[in-house]
Amino acid sequence: MQEPNNQEVTVMGWVRTFRNNQFIALNDGSTNNNLQVVVELGKYDDDFLKRITTSASIKTTGLVIPSMGKGQKLELKATHIEILGDSDAEKYPLQPKKHSLEFLREIAHLGFRTNTFGSVFRIRHSLAYAVHKFFNDKRFVYMHTPVITASDAEGAGEMFKVTTLPFDNTPRNEDGSINFKEDFFGKATNLTVSGQLEGELGATAFGDIYTFGPTFRAENSNTARHLAEFWMIEPEMAFYDLEDNMNLAEEFIKYIIQYAIDNNREDLEFLAQRLADEEKQLPQDKRSEMGLVEKLEFVLNNNFERLTYTDAIEILKESNHNKKKKFQYPVTGWGMDLQSEHERYLVEKHFKKPVILTNYPKEIKAFYMRQNDDDKTVAAMDILAPGIGEIVGGSQREERLDKLEQRMKEMHVPVEEMWWYLDTRRFGTVPHAGFGLGFERMVQFVTGMTNIRDVIAFPRTPKSAEF
Ligand code: ATP
Ligand code: MN
Image 1 (cartoon, rainbow, N blue to C red):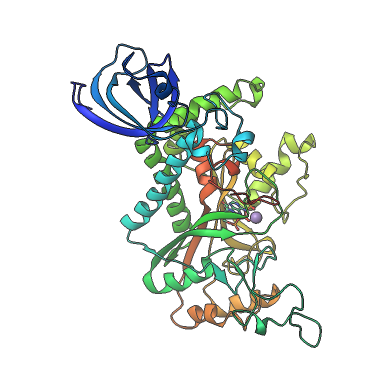
Image 2 (cartoon, protein in one colour):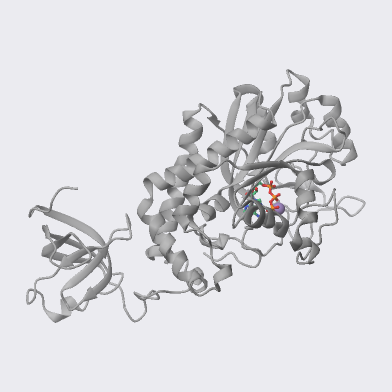
């Protein structure tokens, strides 16, 4: 930065505070640091000064000079101030003090004007940019998969229906079921739960593709890690096996973290301080062992722990935590689905770093995952992160047509309807793999925000779709 030397500048922004009828803390949204604007005493009448209130927008011209005050190197000695928009201090909901996150969620339309959300959403922006940069540099093709779809990638019944049929006098078939032939698309449609299947179509032509778009799940899980509308990144790579897939995912996560450290240092340090302050209220054993930035650097500098589902079950079963019956869901043995408490135990207590679990039982995974030779497991991989739990879900895909069809039948996935998907296995099938990373969970990890609702601007959760 240039030394302040009386150059004249014009700045615009919002007043954060106005002190002693003299010092305006002005913020333009580019950083949490305010510019101190010094108002010459006696130059303006009281009526004018009264309008310089928190969140009023102003345009001011002045000279940049070294600051005598503590806390800033320079300040603006105003020669001209214009009020662009008044803000009634009585009615403005944000006071220049610390508000609870619960309160801020109720006024999410103004949340960006706070330091916390300012930092979170500048980082969110950076991470989104880093996602595109990472894949573009590797020459992946960014694919836009449909938001409205007739397919259900997971075979799960957790989809939002898309229809223009009337609620009363709904057209019915003779057997009483709804006649979707009358519907807008002539068939039942829903909001996408994943772009993967379409992504595979791209990968088997371009080689490497990725998607990055909104995803919808009508799951009624009111947790700090689930949204009904979230953003997912789904790379899909031809000629990749499970190991290549894990390597890419680990490199990708580290790249994004490094990008934030390199480009968002100030905001990260603000959030780190915020987190540390918050944790002061917790008992010692509930506090994080590392600060936010320290945690991110630790993840960068260490390999993710890789182990099979089978080994993980063994560790969990033999853990004191399990023997002392401290899990809400006891570890019954091989074949069980891991609950988030089990995942977090492995990551936070046992390994104390990110973990990649591989080769899950086929019964608890999706039909498209490649079957291993043991006939029991599939080439799946989940990445678990401290404080978050599952952050990535992926697999090598079943590229053998006969095996895939057989598995679809076993799992009651409609083979006929999926003719277009199966065509990739009919015409030049190749080994391929991919994964899905929940963008908000990644933002949570980097910002240290404990609730997923605080890393998306307008969260959609059960019974909540304000703004
Ligand atoms: P979970 O067990 O946590 O519900 P999942 O097994 O349903 O996750 P996948 O279907 O594998 O998740 O989706 C891929 C990734 O998308 C997950 O690893 C996670 O990061 C993210 N994700 C899944 N569901 C949600 C959700 N409801 N809100 C936010 N992110 C989600
Ligand atoms: Mn889920």
